[in-house]
Length: 119
Image (cartoon, one colour):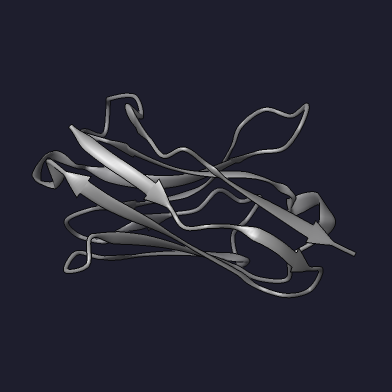
């Protein structure tokens, strides 16, 4: 089993940057990739990108490419999300998730952290 815990979100001013961390514990040797998702009220969950745990290869959907950077620290067992130029529509609950293989579902989820962008 893998446990994921996101750092606290909070209120951010529009135009500023957001940095969240996800602490990974448990059977990390089984991990293939970790991802960040978000879900705004009344909207579907949205992928913000992924990073492979062992090699650090990243993937970003076109919707956030250029604004989002995902990194990992295998020593500290953390995955980080950096999002720039925040807008009020970035207000959402942000989640860290993990999976054990490229074909498996995301079976490990953090509890989520609220980020509110004020204008």
